Length: 263
Ligand SMILES: [Zn+2]
Ligand SMILES: [Zn+2]
Figure (cartoon, rainbow, N blue to C red):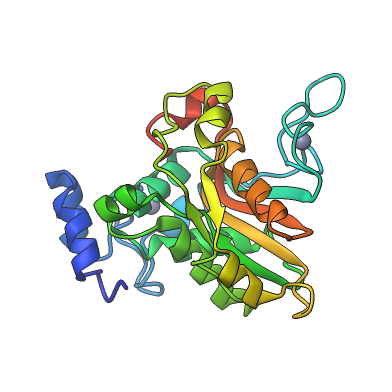
């Protein structure tokens, strides 16, 4: 959808809704979305300079299933209730200043090309098997407001990089959900529980096992408590998928990290 600096109806609409600062940034030539310095000539199409890219801290170690740092004693508590078949979730970088700016620009600034920046970071954390990528969908109301689904841009860039299909119309929101930003972890789970539905006709045409596709990989921008991914994974598992995993660009360190960053 985005071309050159993104002068399309959707991105202009998104920019029009942003602050004047964001609009000015939108119109300026290749300045880094994080530090506002000029992006290197060698990489004129990028929106994040190499210094800011190098400052993004990778999520490593942690629980082998959910990648969350383990408690000092005992097993991981975050993923203990996840459904069988929801195999694992990985995130590329921690939601620090640089990653937060990327998420913010991608979601609210109309900078859809940041989906490729996020995907480039994800590539190091992701080794797909025979999989399809399924971006977490927005509700119709939010999609109309924003003009695009930021997770779809990440998924498309990942799909291009790995040569694997992206399926955008198989999963939908059954209902609008409240913004998760200020909800507690338990409230988040209730908020998104049952919020997704699978299009059975489209799911049927995929015939995942017959086509040799073994895994559905959900793609989202930020992992906070995992509630959204779990709700979407449950929906896919109930519709016949045997194996679902998740990948996100950023991960909040704590619940408090998520303010301003999610939904
Ligand atoms: Zn920078
Ligand atoms: Zn875990």
